[in-house]
Length: 121
Length: 110
Image (cartoon, rainbow over all chains, first blue to last red; front, side, top):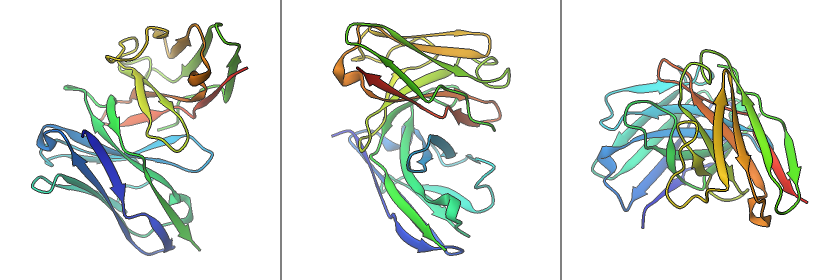
C-alpha cells in the first residue's frame, strides 16, 4: 500500500528537542524528495523543509532554519525531522509529503495523516 | 515568505459553481506556472486536486479546474457536491527552492 505514516509527536517542553519520523511504503523511496509541512490547529498550512531524493540537498523555511534539520534513511525508507530549541509557536500537526514534480518544488502527490506536536511553556 | 492570500470562506449550493482565489506576488504565483491546490478534510491526509496551475491528477473529477492571471490563481469547483465540503489550500513555488501555501479557504456546501 502506497502510504506515508508520521510518528514521534507528543508534548515537549519549550527549549527541548523532538524527532519526527515519516515511514514510507509501497513505492521506491529513493526516487523521491520529501517535505515537511505543518498546520497550527485552526490555521493554514506552512511549508517547513524539503530533502532531495538523494539527501544531497535540503532547504528550510526561515521560521525553522538553524533549529530544524531534515534527513533520510534510504535503507529504512524513513524521513526524519529533528526539531531543536522548540518554541510554543512550533506547536502544530506535522505532515510529511512526497514531491512529485521532476524539475521544481510544490507538487505534493502523497501525504501522511500527520503527527501532533505540542510545545508546552 | 509571506503566505498566499485566500478568502477564509466560500459557499455554494449543490450543483452550483464556486471559485476560490489565491493571490501572491511576482515572486511566487506570478513568477511561475507552479501553482497547486489541495483538498483537506480535517483529520485526513490532504489531497492534491490541481497542479501546475490547471492540470488534474488522474482520478480527480473534471468538476475541479484551475487557472491563473497575473499574481492570482483560482480554483473553480463546478457542480458542487456535498463531499466537496472541505478546506482548500493553494500552494506555489516561490523560487530559491522554497514553497509557500495559502491560508486556506473553508468551502461550505449549503
